[in-house]
Length: 125
Image (tube, rainbow, N blue to C red):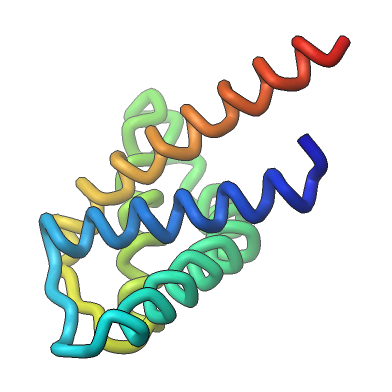
């Protein structure tokens, strides 16, 4: 798949993952369906920006914790990224504990998307 198509699919799947996470573990303000879709598409975009800019910095700063816990601290970092996204996105609320669980869900969605993308690239060769 082209890199733009891959980005769009990841964005939509991340937005869908955030929607599922907020429905299960968080709270969304009373808004119309159109506002809700826009909110989660914006949240998916915010999540992509937070993940690409802040996550590498926080991972490097917390590297001793990541090494001591044999990588399990990455779950906390992923949860922090979700929590920051929820704080920035309008009309969404979630506790930090549930953000950690949501981070696990979003990590699985991104992993599955990467595997599907890799399978598609292998078939083209």
